[in-house]
Length: 461
Ligand code: ARG
Image: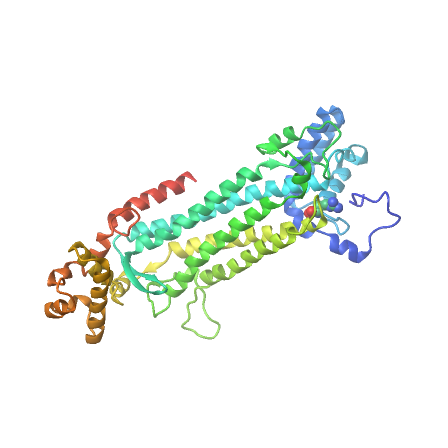
């Protein structure tokens, strides 16, 4: 048996370059276990429709069982002549049960409905694995937040010193997008849980088979409403590719910060030896390669998404062979995240924070200027005026080379008559942070509540 699934109307085999172009076993082999499971369900449905005797069903299921074991052990692999995983597995089945029984399995199905179904099955499992890995990153971030509940740091906008915040608030800020990514994966699953099996090549099956039964057996919520849509749409794959890319982008934003934080200019963190690399020439180097590969690979995942969308955009209904290009980008996005997630989890979990350094920098760049303005507002001064006055304080302090709290009573009064020495009570990093205690703010009380909620949400996902 050669594994060819067609040939009746052809006088000769495909040209060598044709076969080479057509071949997909080098990447679609990961679908093999799903293909076999679906074949088992299909065999039962054939039997239910009176198209396969009980005896033949038994033979076929035993053959598929042994094929599954040989695929798992690596004893059965794709041959040079196999076009794709579906053809290869039919060859393997026929090798085991003979052409008389093995040749009956393909009735009422097409590789078009098969591959659309198997890809969904693979992807639903894959995003569950990825979600677990994302939640591990969230766990590492929340643990670091819990271990540094009092630590302060310079909060920035435009990469410039803005207002002091709690380190825990900043770390938790990275957990929220990641939790939303996991929610997006779960949302994706609702739409992916519709089985195309039974759609045939495009028009459905005439053999009285039950798509609903196969759908249920393969863990789908339902079977497709429209066989043309089911065999030709890949928005489920694009949706997954988007969430995978979004996850990579969210990790990349964190990675970018860790790269900066580990420079001597920042000095916020030291990376653990196990999660950094050295240089082949500069003996002193300790490089943040995990974070850089995260940042770099996020570009690759964005490319996988845009490439897939471009592949889809001009295809008429129904199945076109272009669709064979749908799998590699998505497989790759999953594979890259499966490499990244444990590494970034390890990197984050072992970051050593230099909280003294961060505390020292927290007020630098006059980050308490907003606190002066808000103190004035509490004295009844309009914010426009208060903003001007606080700006005047920054100008004066900069001119004298001192901090805002070092301005004298006379200097304050000269800037604005409402400014008295009492303003100094808000000119500490701790006071500034503690004052931002409305929901969502950086005050310790708020951050402690947030930490509990993040842990609760993460454990429910
Ligand atoms: N290997 C193909 C794919 O991945 C499925 C085969 C469909 N081939 C065909 N000639 N209809 O999309």
